[in-house]
Image (cartoon, helix red, strand yellow):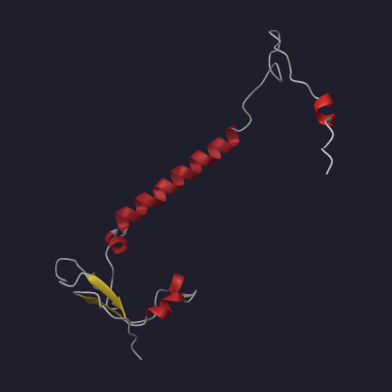
Amino acid sequence: MAAAPDRHKAQWSPLKYDPDLCGPRKHRSCTDILCLLLFVVFLAVWAGVASFAFRNGDPKRLLLPVDSYGHRCGEANMVNPDLFFFDLSTCLKPEAFWKGCPTPQVCVSQCPQDLWMAQ
């Protein structure tokens, strides 16, 4: 196989230092101010949504599992800290992402050691 010709090296040579060079344009200005302002507005709105959610919502629902009856597992009045799904394979369906897992869920004191499914 023949080596590629070095014709590109012959056409291009590195630039030499020029002390009089003032950059690509003499009078430059910022061009992305509008995008920066839109991004700052987006961040402010996002912070407002987060603030509203934490003031009016319940952040514990994100941290503690909830059974089928709405009880939080592991909270002060619930002794059982773990959540058990009766048929975990139903939670793998695509619609379970936005509808939630349709199988019954209960709070248990200890997770089961063997694999089984309720019929």
